[in-house]
Image (cartoon, rainbow, N blue to C red; front, side, top):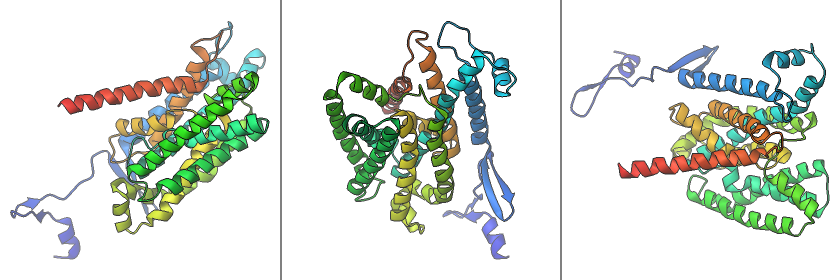
Length: 371
């Protein structure tokens, strides 16, 4: 009998009984692409496809939403406008709404991937850029640019980007002792976030009323009044960081059993953690710098994806699809729930949905504790 025959045959357990070889679940398939073998989860693929279709339909519907007394545009009218076959007030409405819808889709993808990275590396569902304080740091940078230096929208975007990256660096330096896989990283991030919230409150309280109002509106996450130029940073960041994430994902998966396990499998944990921190912060900074801090998308999307697809870890592609669906839906709700009198910042809706989600988790944990 050859070595291959032994490895493929059933092996005896401690009592001498034959143990059948381990098999992948029925939903798992392997596709060969040249010399590579790609694992495909059929259930995750089906769920992702449904989410992509839902996001597309909601985004198209959102393009034709009316925030005045005029009726909404139908899908036929929207397709005609996108094809350049129709003009007029409807086309103007679609063109005005397009930047917000594009940023909602791309921003949801970006925030969800950021949350998935940090939750995987820390092995903690609280590992999210809005909990750890990165988006709060972006708000600090934007406030300094707006209220201290009096810069415009471009300066605010740059200030938010610097603030997010700077906060990520501080949390990394203070919280990486012992690795990200323990609670130190999360606790340090929460502490930094609390101090930044206090400082942000001071900046807003000492500003004049007009500037304070603008700063407060930006801090709730706002997709209104965007232009196509505002979509460029999110496009660029995704184009640059998605290939990097694809390359580093196999190493990131090793962290699902802890940093020690990853290191025992030959992963350079220090350099990998640093690279993942840069990628995760970059994803969060791209969206936050353009529209302000949007709470709970990065926290909720990976956990929902993990529950929709019963996989061993957090599925990145499904998480991205969930994030896009959540944010584009929240934007549509924010623009219509109080229309035509008021349009809410999208952060108000995501915070409300996130609060409901956290309440659901607490109730689920309480039920498990009673069993």
